[in-house]
Length: 261
Ligand code: ADP
Image (tube, rainbow, N blue to C red; front, side, top):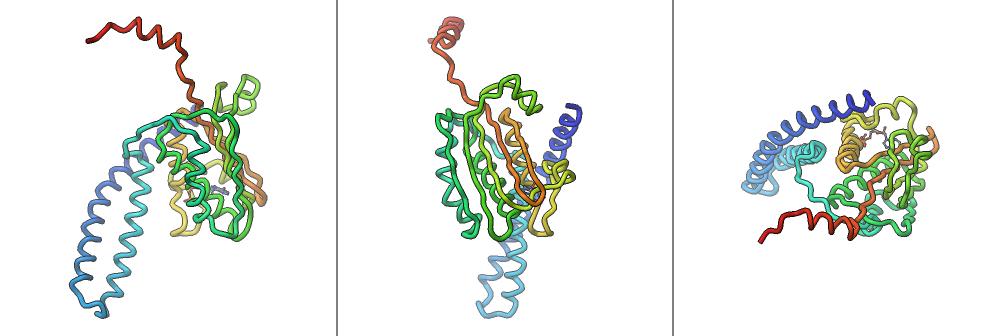
């Protein structure tokens, strides 16, 4: 528990720092980008310096992209949770995800029955899906298989002692599996830390899973990871099932409240 607390504090401070820097950086990048575009438009299209300016523009755009990720990680965007059906969310994203992972990776989608809803900001769910799918794609490399599944899961006392970090309760679970490179113990130990990446420079930022971790904990959910090096990885995201208040409890609330008019 102490380690989790430490991890959470670390994430919090890195997040705040990154968010502050990212915010200022983003403003300066808009100045850079705006002026490059202006300069390029005032020069003739075949001026030799255009190629140089294009390189600057691309680099500035890439930096802006990274800054966006930093900002998202620092959770500076306001969140508006909504009651969502996870199956519908995945289905809406499926086309985009297929394009993201490419044609050589086979993606299977298995929606769970009677899922129930979760109370989460839709764009946060999109972020979870995209990050997990990008990682699965990168772990697979060329060809392989991936699956996305959802399931309504009840964690009782017995199961809770197996999944030591997940308290008993009702959850909607989203799993993303791949038969890629898997992870060794060292990677498993650090994978949620901000800026931890095993990917080559320019490919990974080490912010994907830190972002997922931030979103899931913010929504009182849990993550379970299992991986076999050289074989497969499964990420399971547990989000609390939204339980609608029963009529009885609504009644109590109403009678307890002073009548306003
Ligand atoms: P990034 O993708 O930028 O490296 P992440 O935080 O998303 O950052 O991931 C951190 C690291 O966790 C990755 O560099 C990789 O080593 C490992 N990882 C994440 N997902 C998987 C996966 N599905 N299979 C194997 N390794 C993974």
